Structure formats: structure tokens, C-alpha cells
Image 1 (tube, one colour):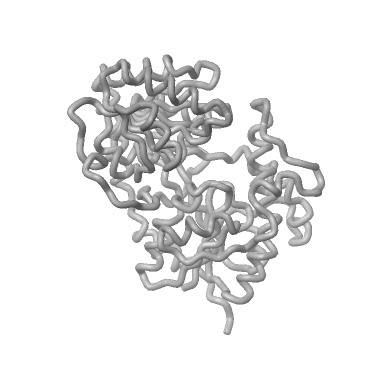
Image 2 (cartoon, one colour):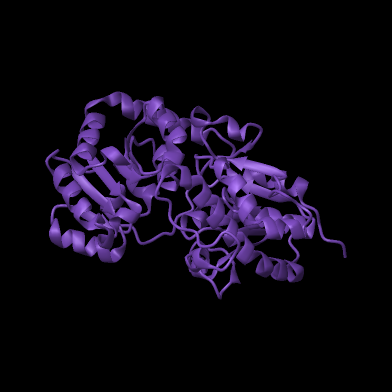
Length: 383
């Protein structure tokens, strides 16, 4: 069986999310290729998978200003623009990438195509080739509100296929732990989440508990000093230091070097989270996604900095679960975040609930058990 995975978006997380299932298929003897914009192909090869670029003239950022109906796609400045932004942007990625995907597929001829949560190229490719398509959730947060906006962005491409909306998947694979499962994904094939991160040489401190409670901080876009994230992170590290904890910052190599110079007492480095998190008592991170999945799997309480109201339904649910605290953007200051960490460290119930969430994840079918489901729906090409 030949399987084509499509990693949409600009973040390596879209590759990491799909890598375990792709690797399981390869280990079962099937042929696998993962396609993406050219800028993501080094990430694909770094996790040990064959990569193909379906678009090299445009990037995931340049498509936002392409001359298409509807004009440029600007980053949302109001909550009611968030779903539109995601649907339009990922829809435009699909429009740009689809011709290259079709050209590659005519030559390589996949029997099934698989994409992630907001990948709209895969269902359109499946319709073009008349092969089944699978949507595998990237993480625990459904973003179905973006789908109608993708239909609008993709109207010309859909019309060419005789469609008025992006086709529903032939199989939906969900990785959300049952306690956080929302009705949007009822009927999905459940799969255990397993980390698909890049790796590095491990040092003892990365897999050994510290003598004090440990707090891990990873803030995504806030790490970039150009947007004021550097000052925020500096203040947060200082605030956490007053709690008498071991502070670990997951950051790019260049930023980690700067942080170590400014804060000699902290650990800062590019970290494989599946190793560092079992040594931690709290993790602070931005918006959830795969970082949250790493934390859930490790059974570590979380402080989630929720910037987008589109994610509130999911973040409110995890806060009600009792394993995490959520700080919305309007309340997000380093002192508030440090206070949330202190609250978690002082109440053992957070850790107990986080361990329960980990047990739920690990009870789900592992990726190798999903291979048979894909074999059943695959449609070999004639000849």
C-alpha cells in the first residue's frame, strides 16, 4: 500500500503530529511519502520520513498576499476573525499546493492520502484521484469552525471538481483523550498520541529530576524578542525564580544561549519534551496543541496561555478537568503566570488529575493498531 501524508501549515508541529502513524505504516511494510511546502521538508527528513515538496515558488507566508478572490489574508485583530483567518489561510495553502500534489500523485500513485486537522489539500486530492482520504487530528482541539471559511476560499478549485464544500474524510482518526472529547469528533477512530518530535543528544539533566520542583516554560511566538517576547520571558523567569523552583526553558539554540547568559541559574536549550516533561512538576506554554499533548502524556499539570477565543471551548474543558489552569490573553502577565504555577505546586490534586489524563491516553490504541483500518479503506490504482 502506498500512502501519501500532507503536512499543511508552517509549523514543524504538523509534521510531528503525523510522524508516528506514518512511521507505523513504514514499519508494517508499506510505502510512505510526506509532502509539504519546501520550507518544511527538512523537518520531515529529520524525523526519518521521505519528503517531497509540492510547492517551491510560494511559501506559507507569501500566499497570504496572493492575488486571489477575497484579497490578502491578514492576521486576525478581533475574535470573530479567527476562524475566518484559519479557514482562508489553510484553504489558500491547499489551492496553491494542490497542482503539485496532483502532479506528484499521478506519477507515484498513492492508494490512500492522509492529512491533518486544517489540511484541505488532502480531501481535494482524494476527490481528484478518486482515492480515500483520512484526516488525523493534529492535537486535542477541534477547529471545525474554520471549515466553512475554507470552502469560501477554495470556491474556484471546488467548482472545478463539481463540489461546493471540502469533502468529509473517509476516516477520521482522533487523538484527544476521552475526558476532553468534544461532540465534533464523535464516531472517530481513536488513536493513542505518541511524540513525533525531532531528537538530539540527551544530557543527564534532561531526564533526571531536580532536587527542587521543576517548571518548564515554552512560549512559542512569545520567544521572539522582536515582538516583545524577550522582555516578557525575562520577567517570567525572574518571577518563577522567586518560587524556589528549577526553571527550564525550551527555546531555539540562539535564544537559549541569550537566556543562559542573562539568567545563569536556569536551564535553557532546545529540548525533546517527551524526555524533559517527566522530570517536571508544571509546564507553561502557549495555546495548547502538541505541547499540551506532550504534557498530558507525561501526566504533568499545565498553565496554558490562551491567546485565541477560538480555542476557549477546548481550554475551558481542560481547566474544568482539573489538570490545568488557563490564563486568557487579557490577564496574561508574568506575575499572574508565576502565581498559577505556585497554585499548582501547592495543590497535589492537579498532579493527580494530570496523571489520570495520561492513563487515558496510554489506554488508547497505538498507531500500529490503526494500520489495519487504513489497509481496509485503501483503493489500489488499476494496473
